[in-house]
Length: 151
View: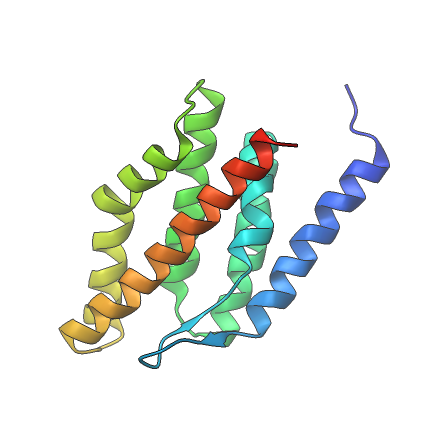
């Protein structure tokens, strides 16, 4: 069944908005930088078919390649979208628990090792950066799960 154009345009608009939000990083206490883009694209990740959901996360994440100069962040966010879409489409209901599992098992350690090993940050700073990113992503999934459930 084809998707009506108005829904496709709304989804594309949200992806563009998320990309624009990634262009303007927010400076956090401690010198870390973050973005509110995940709060815009994460409901799409939970609602769209798998292929489109991953694109909805990967396109705004690709903007971080130019802004933050961290290619591994793009990879980890895309992996998170793949994991969540797999979880949702196999019938998983506890999306927040699935996201915690992703970050505890794969995303968190990979992010820390990339910040520490590839970026050359001191271990404590790498841990702080990874924790900030994990916190934002988990909050975005909680927000998206609430939006999806109550809309």
